[in-house]
Amino acid sequence: MKFLSCLIVALACTISATAQSDGCMQMTITQPLQFDFDNIQELRNGKTIRNAVEITLKPSVENNLYVYASISFAGLRIPAELRNAISLRLAYTNHLKGSQSRIPVHLSQTPVLLFTCSSEQVRKSARTYVFDVVVDPIARAPVTDCSFTINAGLYK
Amino acid sequence: MMALRLFLFAIFLTCAGFCNAQQGIPICTQSVSGRVYVPAIQQIEILETGGGLLNFSSANDYEQGVSKDNYCRIRVSSNSPYIVLVKPSTSEFASLTGGFSKPIPSAVLEISSDRQPLYQRLSPEGVSLAQSAGDDFMQEFTVRIRARPGFEYRAGAYQMNLVFSITTP
Image 1 (spheres, each protein chain N blue to C red):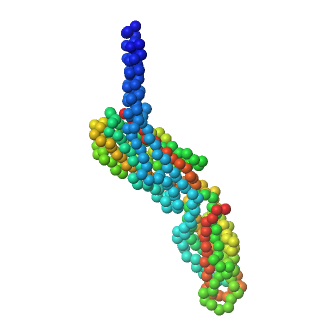
Image 2 (tube, rainbow over the protein chains, first blue to last red):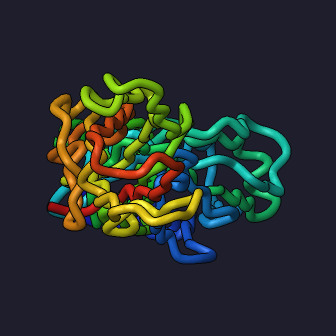
């Protein structure tokens, strides 16, 4: 009986810890991620939506953190040129330490490291990371109308 | 029995701790969505022109014709099937020097390109200079012109404009 009680208590602690960490990161868009290409020049130059995605890490999580991102597409005709053409470029952060680069991070189906953040800094206050969303030149893209989803995961 | 319970409990705690620390499982995930829209886009540019003056200086020129091999270069950009047409802006040449002359029809001028090497007489409906399924996306080609007026028309200077267009077949 005592064993069962201990087991229940331990299970409850585990569930509680998981529930806390569920709300540790938020990713939102500050403007629609709508890339409309109207002419050849736009296809040749690519397009950027500035300050479009915001990731906020809440100050409740522990350990060193890694944020990975990936992308998936949906639609009838997804051009091969587009599959690796979308990237996230850090535009702003209130977290000056840790590992963040302004070099665009190209997204693919496989999660890639977006940035890292150390635990002490996270504990003090929420950290905000604002990203530009960049579509590289896709001059040879055929007609398409597809949607994409950017997925971000927070890892210890 | 107590030892067994402690052993099982220890295994449970170890498993719980391992699952939380495992690198391959995210603590939490979030996602945002967007859209990419690329419609059918077609563009035609005249890159350079070698000039369109055809000089007739001998009887042989009138009879055999005079041609210009580098009349202009055309760049076509398209991500969908296309056809490049050329049409005369008017059905006849306009006289620049005046005086009575039998009207010179636009069909006196013939045109060809790298993509359609055979000369074709101009017509009001347009003459095809290139066509594609749209998978080459960007193409450049040279346009050639030739005129064989014969001896039916009065000497002088005559002019006509050509209109290049790209359209979906």
